[in-house]
Length: 138
Image 1 (cartoon, one colour):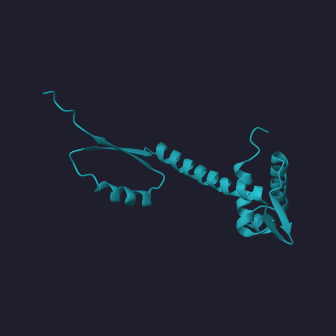
Image 2 (cartoon, rainbow, N blue to C red; image 1 turned 60 degrees about the vertical axis):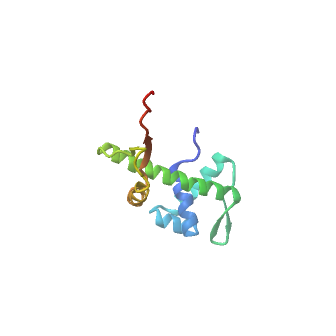
Image 3 (cartoon, rainbow, N blue to C red; image 1 turned 180 degrees about the horizontal axis):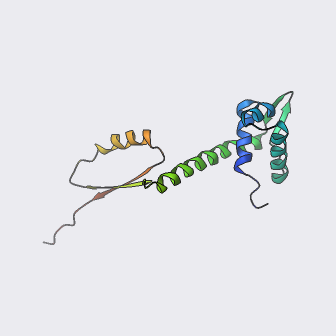
């Protein structure tokens, strides 16, 4: 397999960690517990690492599993952001805003406005350019 780590496997790991057990993760993901177990076993087999160790009814991450989960959560978040950005681009929304400000102006006023915008639309980017007029030769 080219990429043994799938988004589905990362979602399963996240659910197990958040819920504390395979059965609770299965319930949260609307799956049977055997499907959760199979996903974890397949991932461990493909990566050749142990991701969880069981203590009673709880599933605890191994150090390798913790790394996989933490970075996997970043991938899941980035994937969600990519999906939202793609939908916005399809509807005509720009994902990068370019602002050019003349160097003669005080542009400190723009930073609080950008911060307010980021609270509403955190996945957008701003490119700010300060434009200077070339000096005329003497």
